[in-house]
Image 1 (cartoon, rainbow, N blue to C red):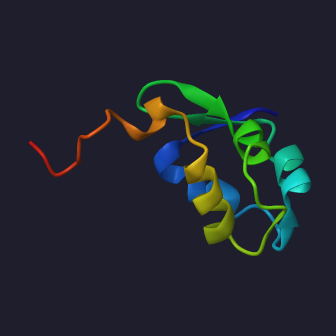
Image 2 (image 1 turned 180 degrees about the horizontal axis):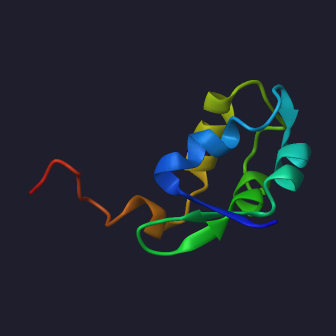
Length: 85
């Protein structure tokens, strides 16, 4: 059954995995999850498959790697900080 998760709640979805977990296994297990961004969406399994690490020891490991491969629309407008009003 396909699931959707807001980007701000991504960590809770990653906690469902048993660590350590290989990139291949994580890709397979997260293939039915869609991450919803402010503008757009992306398949979580696809994002994991694009990371460079072969194995993740923790939620923090995989989360950091996913953040490195996020599409531009996931992180907002370039050169803008959330502190600006």
